Length: 623
Image (cartoon, rainbow, N blue to C red; front, side, top):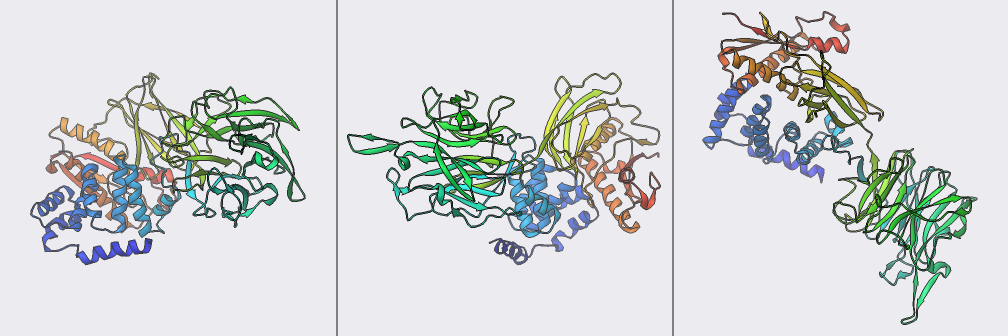
């Protein structure tokens, strides 16, 4: 299907005959000369005269993209891609959509880009973690979700837990040759297992016959050493049921049973003393130290229809059931508890606020704070439940009927940490409120902007594996830029000191912070726009001022390449200033490549020295 889609896009582009022609010659010449503002006027004239096609839309979008006019770029990219485009256009459209905060649509465009350019590093990064940018500031996004190959297309599969010896246990109604549950007219549930290899692939499921009966069996939980299981089982199997005399029906409750491993087989099955013919006890989960068993039950003295409870375990001695209370349980239904190795309780609930049906929530046992919804991805408008995670192997599984039948899904934990920025006056050390704090990725793409509180603080939740840049701006202060290195999960608390503006205008130049560009690109980034807006304000205050924009590169490329790149960056910078209302007669631009380094380190520069050589200067032109 993906190949058909890509070929269709190619056919649409070629068959429509989009491209340069005599009608676009004037506008194309302006565009090729980096005269983006004038090029926009020329392309808009073609649109007005009904002479525009997808090529013109693309050129308009790219022109606005180069002068950082996100809204107009987005409008024209949408028109362009509606008619089919090259891969790079989808990529640029995705970037402007992210700048608008339209993350869902941005991901769709990145999906198309990735289909067309699967070997591109940007595509690989997107496919590895497609929801990374949209959920940076969303603490509920802590897992990436994917399907598994062992699901039965017609029958229910759910309740998966991964043991420390890489065996995935789950329950399924796939054995259709046995008895059917008279209440549902569906096959009874049985326990199955599948072996997970180092690549994460699962073997063909096989029945755990020694744990199964002709009635319902499962789900289960397994001890850390893999030698003990606790599992749910229908009371019919051992005759613990009640007879309804009026119609002769035998009503059995779910109970929890224990089994131990002996010579590779499960045996010595024992019923727990908390089982009853009056209420259900089910969905067991054992703590990593084996001392606490969590479960779901509708036993008396609960809060809702079914609650999460726990009991202590000491060998074959079991404590009294303890209700986990209103921070976990509601007047609705709670079930499928799972206690992780780091003492996080995951459970399903229809009572807590969610997306619909059952949602999965987490509750930190140690912190004893309010339960949190796991958010989009794990949860949908359908039933999502039976969440488990093996913290040592960094993989989880949960169940959902989002496809119309209960299936098992994989959940990969996303390592996140919090970046806390404390903004202060460099001289007085007083906290600064109302400062704009922007976080950007390693390519200087803006991810989110927040304003500091009265205590001068703001924070972002970010991915552990990536580098970020914090940019802080406040009127009357110099812009501050701080690098955030990858973390193993520990929060980063940083102080950002702002210097008051001092001699930003000298006899020869206007001093700004470096104007950053994406690698091998010349379009203005969000960080660059913040700096250039300061220059726009200065030039509007000094109406006679004329500026020469001189752009420099580092020495990584050839002299010819660097000269061309610096010229395009100088022109893009000038075009941005024009787009903000600065008369083009007051501006000139020149690229000097790597010929005038700030630090003459040649090919032995450190990354910091390379960065200092990549700069733009704003020289005051004297008449």
